Image 1 (cartoon, rainbow, N blue to C red):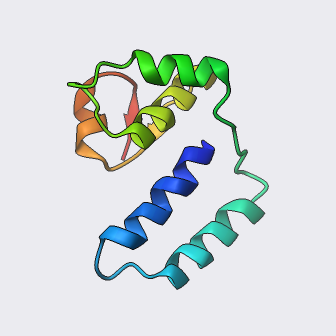
Image 2: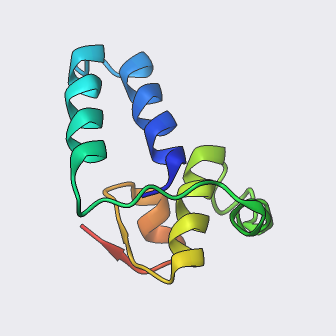
Length: 94
């Protein structure tokens, strides 16, 4: 999982009604304590990949870094985000 996912989840609590900071705290705790979740940083390779994605294809910077992390790891991305799923940038699962 990209560290950008943690920021993106926080942003959802700030912009979406019905999703609270407590929801984020519980989800974050669950994700970070799971032995099946590996946290990956935004390193130079991920940053370069993220900034090479055309803005007209994917404008949200956090989504770009999340996609770039999955690309760098050669993994499909689990997301319900329609822009990412429709972009053909990466294989997605939902």
